[in-house]
Length: 147
Image (cartoon, rainbow, N blue to C red):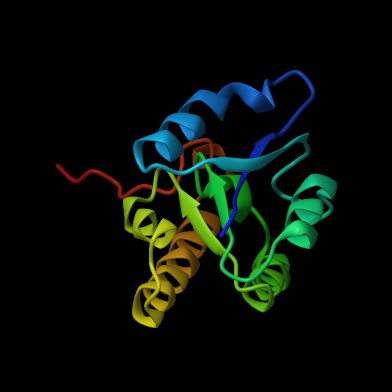
């Protein structure tokens, strides 16, 4: 299993590598080494992301795609998310997001239940995020606080 970090920012004015320290710390705390990092400045709303697809092409079954926030992957339309998710599933790649603690167990999960639960969580998070108004999308996929 290789851990591959994906770092993305939406515009060239933003620092896509700003999450590197957090991703490195997460991996180090679990005794993991990040095999490679893929950094790009591309809009999360479009599927054409060369570095993300280079990462997926490099992946072997069981590899981990590590991201700071699940929205680094999930700002797509439902149709594009389905295409991306299909490629991830076909490669048997595990998505681990620092802001989605339920995904953290996937760095060591060998059981099918944990992997399937993560897929369901990821899909639910995408659905929740994509249904939110555009002006609120700058926040990651987190539960809303209730009064």
